Length: 445
Ligand code: UGA
Image (cartoon, rainbow, N blue to C red; front, side, top):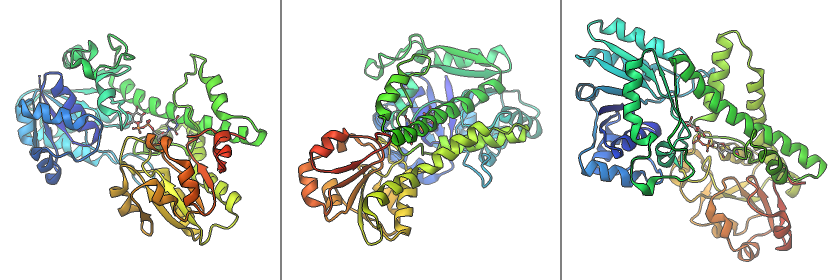
């Protein structure tokens, strides 16, 4: 199939690349000339495991091309996926101006019928608005609309896209559903490079075909539910701390009930990134506009917002005075496996510490380039041992694998005080105590 992807962010670039990998001809369009020039030169604008290899492979065999021209993309394709950003506005609702602009452009350039698929995370009823735009700007051409929400995670985006738990298709009639089923057929049946297959992925991948509104709500509800699980376990972890219970065992005991599930019950600093915080806000706002006060989700948000300050309290409870202390930070990105700093809890934690007069040294395996612009006053160093030098406390904010194998004997010798505050529960408290550390973590009284 000939597919155009508009927007080459995390979702757009991964979607376009993976579609080309399973045999479709894809043109990826973005108005950002710098980004498209990079992709044409074979350079990657984002860091995502396995993506570079697939981009090079499919670019090389001519299945994946890049352009700054929507006109070219629309002309060359039968199916167009809108994957542009929907950042939050001041009051929490999603800014849909890019979606609307792209819809107008598609309408003005299309000369034959097209299937337009919304893949960006958008408020319910956006599909209806897009349809109205098409009618308003081009009444000559037949446009079909579909919603096909994306569930990939940063850091494992390629694996998630090719091995999804389910594929959701929202349509108004059968024709567009059949086209989308055909596009996804190789993924539903895992007909691609076996090295990219995840054995745990259901086979065939379940397909949910529904109306457009329901598909849009599935995306809101999925992200909100996952965020709710995280805030729930964080609330339980606070109670565990008060009674001397162990959140890791509690999460295991609760999560082994298959109705609950073990995933997304990791207590810690809370959720960040460009999806959960903004999607939660947007869903609360959508509900409000529909006259439903979604207090449950407001509470999920409140619990999450408290997490950075609670971690700083642990540092204060250990060091007493933070002013003029050197705090070493391990991990800055909002989660491991990505260099993404958007809505990372580390930004909040560091800002509170700086306000209290701490000197901050930091190390992250991937995100320091991006973090430098966001964190003035922080000294960035090249490895965890340099972070530990002269530090009064080490604070773990992102659970990177490489921290698991650190030489703690060496770290202890480098530090002024052997204090570790672990916001991600990476280590066994007893072992850390045996190593001679004052080790504080989350929910393990
Ligand atoms: C999330 C969803 O997991 C994807 O399904 C969805 O497609 C995506 O948002 C989106 O809407 O685009 P992502 O933001 O990449 O994906 O990252 P997650 O792995 O979900 O983690 C989100 C945050 O929750 C991270 O800060 C992570 O540290 C935190 N988290 C996650 C916890 O604190 N505890 C957990 O148990 C799990």
